[in-house]
Length: 106
Figure 1 (cartoon, rainbow, N blue to C red):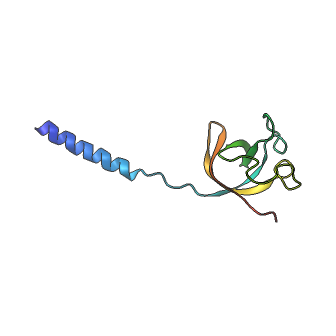
Figure 2: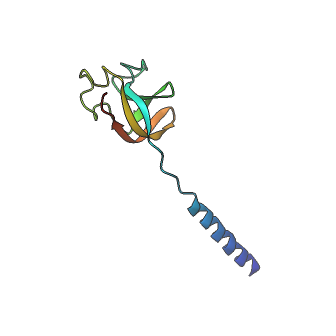
Figure 3: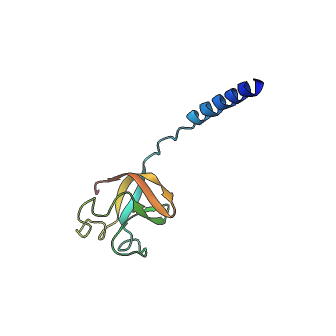
């Protein structure tokens, strides 16, 4: 009986601890965004959206280059480096984006 009571207490404590560890939402950050191959000199298989964070470039997973206008326009990602507000994290050398907002040109 004591073992059962001990297991019940241990289980309750573990469950309460797991509920406290909710992942906090990530803060948005401002990054440079452009075509990884055309503007950042990354090796790829055509025009792909990339971001540059702290001087390092990452291809983006979760948003595409064509989701933000014509990539080959004069202000498009293949012709210009733009600023974007993003939320996400680097996983396996790719930026896994959960939010991508292209900022207006100055």
